[in-house]
Structure formats: C-alpha cells, structure tokens
Length: 423
RNA sequence: GUGGACGUAGCUCAGCUGGUAGAGCCCCGGAUUGUGAUUCCGGCCGUCGUGGGUUCGAGCCCCAUCGUCCACCCCA
Image (tube, rainbow, N blue to C red):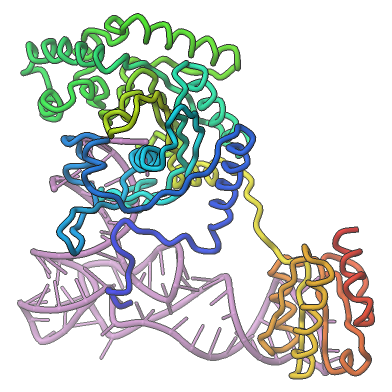
C-alpha cells in the first residue's frame, strides 16, 4: 500500500461496520440531554490560539506541546480545539448568552491533541460535552452527574465508578498549593523525577502520581480537605447528600485534582477498570472563574466531557446493545427490464410506505448471488423480479426467515409488504 | 517527549538454524432449468510497511524511517 494514502498518525476512520456503536452512543446522549433540558450548541473547531492559552493555562502540557497550531495568512496563530469548554465559553460571551441568563448546553464533536496515540487516546478524538452556566449551587453539579449516570444506565455501561473531590475556591486552592509546595520542597530528594518537575508547575499533580514508591510520602502530605474554604466545604457536603439521595454511589478521592487551571470547587471523574491505563471515561468540574478570565461577566459554570472512543470501547467490551441497521426488504432483479421495473417499483413502495427500508441489489448478477446478499443483508423479505414477473405484472415475495413465497401484483405490492413487515 | 513489542493477501495469521511466499475467512464462478444454510470443486488476491546495508542469495540478519499496539508523561 502506498504510504502517502495512509491516515495521519493518531487519526482514525470509523468504518460502516463500527458506526452503529457511535450512533447508539450519540443518540442516547441526545435523548438524555433533551430530557434534562440541555440544548445543543455548535462551535467552530478552530479558534485563536490565545483563547486556549488563556482558558487552559499557558504552562500546561496541552498548550505548550500538544496543540495543533499554525499561522493563518495574516500571521495570526490559530489552533484546532483541544477541548470544547473554552470555545463554548467564548461563544457564550461573544453572543451575549450570559446577560442575566442561565444556559444548559451540550455539544458533540471532534477535538485535537498532538499526543502519542494509544488505546482509547487519539489525536483526533470525539467528546460529548455538557456545560451549565449561571447556576452557583451544588444542585446543578448533582444534576450533571445524575445525567451521566443515566446515560450509563441507558447504554448498558457498567464497571464505571464515580470519584469526586472539591478543589475549593481559586484562593483556597492557591493557599493549599503553597502549603503543599513547602511540604514536598522539604522532601525534595524523596520525589521522583516527574514529581520534582511537577513541583514547579502544578504541585497538586504530585498527589495523583502512579509511582507506588511515593505512596507513603503522598499519604503524609497535607490534605486539601483541611484547607477548603467554608463555603466550598458546605457546597461539597450538599453535593454529597444530593448524590446520596439519588442513590448514586461515589468515592471521595482527595487526590483527584484535574490538570486544567480553570477548575474550582467540584471536580469529578467516572473511571473504569476495563480499558487499561486510559481509565477516565468522563470527567469535569466547576469553573466559576473562567468566564471572567475570558472577559465575560462573572458567571458560575460547570461542565464535563466524555471521551466517545472510550465509551464505545466500553460498550463493546461489556457487550452492550447497539442496533445494526438492516433493510426490511431486498429487491432481487434479473435482466435489464426487471432492473428498470424494479427500481421504479421500489420508489413506488418507498413513497407509499415511507418508513420501510428497501435495499435493491442492482448487481445484475445471478439469482443465486443476489439471494446470498439478500440473506446476508438481514432483510426479512425478498422481492423477486425476473422476466416472468415483469410480463405478468407481478412480483414474487419471498420471506427469507421462513414462510412461503407468493406472487403479488405490482399494484398490491406496497400494501402487502407493509402488512408483512409491520403487521 | 521516554521505554518496550510489532508491521507478510481486504481480514485473522503461519513461514523451521537466511535459499526467490502459504492457510482460513471474505469475494467471484460451478455442482440440473430463475432462489439464501451446510458440503464439495475451481478462481481472484501480495513490489512480505518504506528506504538503505550485509550476503552468491533476505519475509527472515543490521541500520534508518514511517505506522500500530502497550506503558510512562500528560489528559477526556
């Protein structure tokens, strides 16, 4: 195979044989959003690089080395979006959606990050994304989580577990960050290389280290919970009681800190043990400061993003249901006359019975070959048209899953098929 | 960006210590006239990821490169 026809690294084609999983996931998501009053927003894939720098944080890995950035003709730096939140906040501000208004929004689409690909992690990846603006209380935090729990239920996804934490206000977190920095700085030589580096950038991330050798050191670190401001503590307690009341099990994970700068107070993550090391399937949190940070009026906000590749992998792994589209009726036609008449008949039936799914063979091959395809298509019925039928003005209707074949006049065909399929 | 494994027909893979490629599936045709399972017969399919090197000779050895997978970093 010629190499320049290969897809770019980390880019994937979703082929027809797999598309039904994606359709299932997306249609359940849309259905659930609709029942919770979330409305769709569609935003560009491309924004000024500056937007992501301001929103996500200048010194995060995402911004420093993982964005697809390039210059347009005027020399302005543009980037493919690495996540949806920044774009949605921008859209909300630039369209004036936040003036004394509340919004519950969702979007579904591709994001881009120049990471090294591995299972469930690609350079173009798809997310389902939900954001709520204008709600300060923990009730919306709970509702967003309940919404995801409902999606898992409807999709049949088990083996996911909810972890929650509170990061406090930006001020409380900044204070805690310093306490933590002092603690680890004093024990600098006990840190591994990665964590020594984290100490400079985001010391909270040290808590999330996978290195077992540092477990004791981390366990002895000052706790975020002890440095929460009073309001955030009350907010978090209330969230927990709302989740309890809704019977959604969760674990408080004090080491769940999130990588992005803009989070504050509630953060949460749905994790699974079924996908190897890419264990987060959906995660999000509150970002009360981001709207002002991007130049809008102070607006409380919270959102989450679900990785669609990972959700699809989970569905496949767990044997969830995802209906495959099959035709109801398959037209088998031999000879030029029959082909022409059959095409015409199929149109006639589609007009008369709009929701009937009809697939025509059109290969002009032998009956044997056409019947094989008819069988494989999963259709319930075959409509057979050869020279004899055309002359008689009848089609032979053959049930493919048991039953007798019989001749039906062209005029009666639509009604007959409808009765057999829907009756 | 770091470490490891791997790249052979459309798919899944085999190919012994180097001697100029195989199987199954799929697809196509046939086994009495225009009818889908199974079975049987036949057919199609590859510059062995790419480019160099070693060798009389490389799918098998060496180097580079691209890609995939797994883990780390980071993160959904």
